[in-house]
Image (cartoon, rainbow, N blue to C red):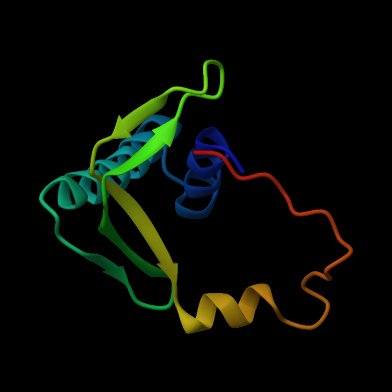
Length: 106
């Protein structure tokens, strides 16, 4: 599912105009990103939580030259699915290990 697909789904379910649905989806994403920038946790009950994690600095290697490179510490976004979401994804008939996962890009 792409962002455009999500906008279409919101538009279909709410019977709102496409432009209004686009504003809704953008506002939700912007709110999540803004909270993560401030290091706040975003929790959506029944879906999961978004938070940031701190990665330590480390010494890496340039794969082309093999020379050592210092990789600085950084903050990364992290999503933890809720128990309900995990159960829904793993429900019997909802998908098997042999099935190909659907691509989701936003």
